[in-house]
Length: 113
Image (cartoon, rainbow, N blue to C red):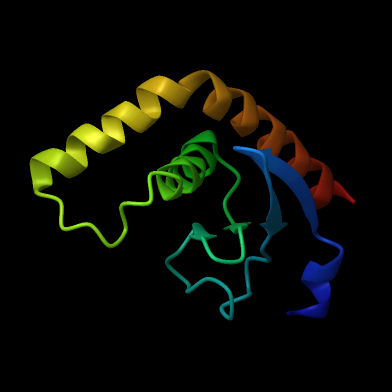
């Protein structure tokens, strides 16, 4: 892990599990490619964010919530995938929206340190 990142993260709780949220420097292409603004690593329960927008944060949080459906190895049709995604968002929207604000404010704080 990049030394810069060791102090540029904070913990959040998703479905009872601790997740780490990292602020990624603009010039860091080790964790995120040049064209990536965010990424979610399921096994390590880490979220990397480079661009601080509600849309990017929401997108990555939805990935994290979808992880808990344990469907990554299922062979779902496009319709089943769509339905599962809609179910995850509809049943968890309040949690996602609350976490989005927490993550956004946490990343702003890290950025300004």
